[in-house]
Length: 16
Image 1 (cartoon, one colour):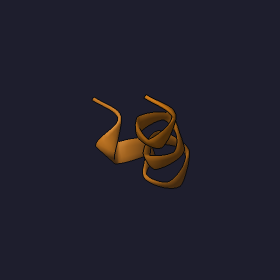
Image 2 (cartoon, rainbow, N blue to C red):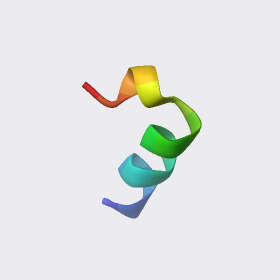
Image 3 (spheres, rainbow, N blue to C red):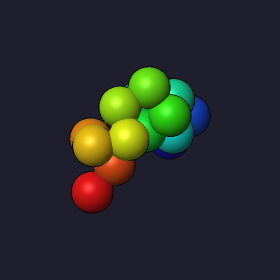
């Protein structure tokens, strides 16, 4: 799930 967190940090919009 680390990748998801990184994606969230890179793309806050992606963190829904």
